[in-house]
Image (cartoon, rainbow, N blue to C red; front, side, top):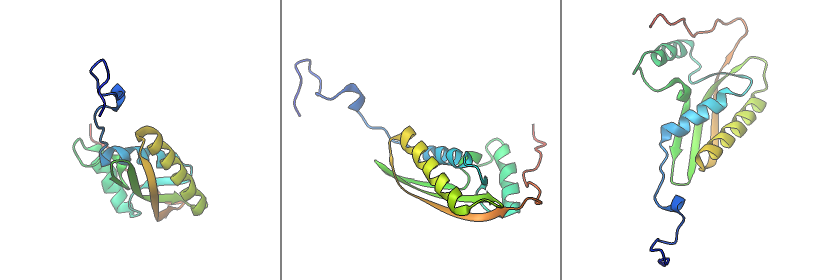
Amino acid sequence: MTETAAGGSGREPGERGRTTIADGVVEKIAGLAAREVVGVHAMGSGSGLSRTFGAVRDRVPGGGKAGVSRGVKAEVGEVQTALDLEIVVEYGVSIRDVARAVRENVISAVERMTGLEVVEVNIAVSDVKLPDEPDEEPESRLQ
C-alpha cells in the first residue's frame, strides 16, 4: 500500500472501512417494494388464519418480526443477496405479470438502496384473494 504525502492511505475517505447490511434490512426493503406492485394482496402464508394471527402479532409491540418483512427471506453476502418471497395475489391478475413486476421492483429497490447485487428473487404464490372473501386483517383493539 502506498502512503500519500499527507500520510493517508491513498484511499478516498468513503472507502475506508466496511459496511455490513443485515438480512432484516434487505427483507424490509424487498417487502415494501413487493407490496407496491398492483395485484399483490398480501405477503406471507396463504392461510387466512395465519394472516390473521400475523396481523395481530405485528400490531403488538415486540410481537415479532415487523409486518413489512413478513413473507420475505433474504440471504445477504458481502456483495450479493438472494431473496425468497411468498405472496398472495388478487383474483383475476396475471400471476406471471405480477411476479415479473415484483421481481423488477424488488431488484431495483434493493440494488439502489444497498448497492448489493440481487442474484435471484424466488417467488412463491401461496394463495389467491377472491373478491367475495373477507379481508382477514381484523380491527385492532390494542392501544
